[in-house]
Length: 215
Image (tube, rainbow, N blue to C red; front, side):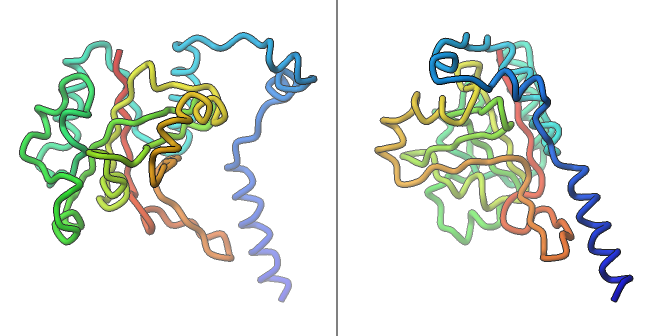
């Protein structure tokens, strides 16, 4: 019995070590009354991008920051080369990347065909710097299945997609959220753990994820 207990406590200790805990400096900066919160300066896009990249990579996301739209397209082309692709409406992909996925399966295709896709390509409606999360609002041409069914999800992010916190995203996209049936938040590859904290990747969604950030 003692051996089983020690093994379980050991797994908990290892899991705790992987948790990302805000620093004391961050906690202090976030503390204070409501007036201080309202008056705080919004971070620059560059600062939000930098933090987003750090958080996303800590989650196991392949993250690329490209200097030009052409470089974004080239990166996407490399990532999905040889794969059966499911995509949002090509017209909704930024940087002209719709041309890269021309002829790919769309989110309106029969579900049995979508299930055979090897990669899903989307843009996003929000990139949350604080957590490295993406927000995908379902709507015409933006099927939620594209980011959920294939084992590999590639997302394209623009500078204007960045928000410091989840609350900032909700405020900025309130109208779009009110008019949508679904909003998916993606925080790294899909992962789940059993009662013994044995972590498994890719059970309930993509086990691999890449984010390409453009200029």
